[in-house]
Image (tube, rainbow, N blue to C red; front, side, top):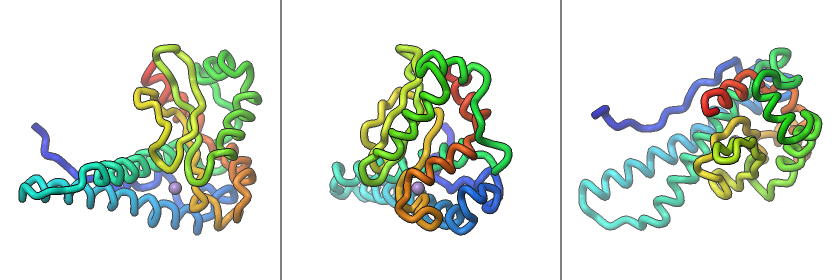
Length: 203
Ligand code: MN
């Protein structure tokens, strides 16, 4: 049996300046080094708290511990997916190709229609959350979903292909409260190759 581990903050797969002008160095640094790290630390603290309570055989409020744990793990996993479905400015954006394009066209009739629906999903998330393109193996369909905070409304068996973070901490320095403007910028740095790769892994 392999040794158990704690979560670690993955380094960005590009430089902090690479997403400019769509996401500034300051915004990306804060988001990755402070916010994402806080979820990693939060999840690890909870795991260690649970370890300790089990070892000492003391009581712990399981309901609240599990809720907090899933919040932090959700935050960590979603941020990790988000960083790697973005590409440096000039190398991302445009339209997907390959089998991903086929699935998007079949489900949404066109890329433009998909982009419009995904944008509406992202802009209309209530409060803090995410928009995601996921894939359901039972129906063989891609599905757009909204994620509230980090962990509500997720279909557990659906693989996530593409996510965008619409917490204010993701865009406030660059776009103030204009989430729509951030989503417009996001489309310029989507790493479609990575999204296509995620799809191919599961179909
Ligand atoms: Mn975030």
